[in-house]
Picture 1 (cartoon, rainbow, N blue to C red):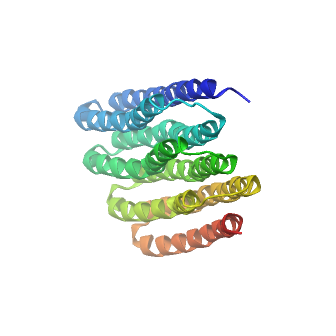
Picture 2: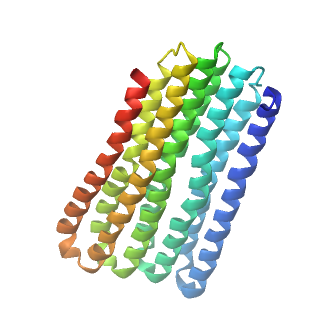
Length: 312
């Protein structure tokens, strides 16, 4: 086992280096897409530049949140093995969604710029679309950062290994439950931007469908968030109970990953149909949401097992 002080400094270095690395790669993709869009539509450079600056600011948000969280961690050194487990959980809760959002978010921002070059008279609507969809995509990372600070704040009061495992399990729960929604939302938003290029008259139909579908894709993370809150209220008395909490995190986290990705894959197929045939938007949208609802029910199996492990 690494010493507590080594865990302290290693967690801080990882929280700074990896999200910044992912952000830099994402911003490089955004810059490349901007240059390509300007080359294609130089007469509409103002609208393209607005989308570029907004996209860069959004991509920078997660890096700033990570830096602030790291600064908080820096003021709370790890002094014993109990706090060490809590720090590992808090680090996972921040690091994994920050990496995914910082890098994967750039795909949809770059696609928004490509869409603006293809539909130059739709740049204001594309900008609004990007701001809303990206804000929803960043929600898991923001909530995870908040809960990581809560875990760190409670770390100093932990005096037993079951309590330490509880903090680790809470962080692991949040980290695993954020993976599927982040990947699914990135893919879905990118496909939505590509659909916008096909028919600007379908913007309103695509916008409403995208908003509802994003909420459904993000639902598994909300299940994990609610379960993590419940886990924090417990007082495990044995090491076996602490291990059960870790297993609950793996059970629910593992169940949510394919659910969110599958929901995104299924709903993205309706985007092209809505773009090409807006008159069928109601039919396609209703059936897509119906399919997503069935896909999301499979996450409940993981939730049931996780609750049984927590409560029994």
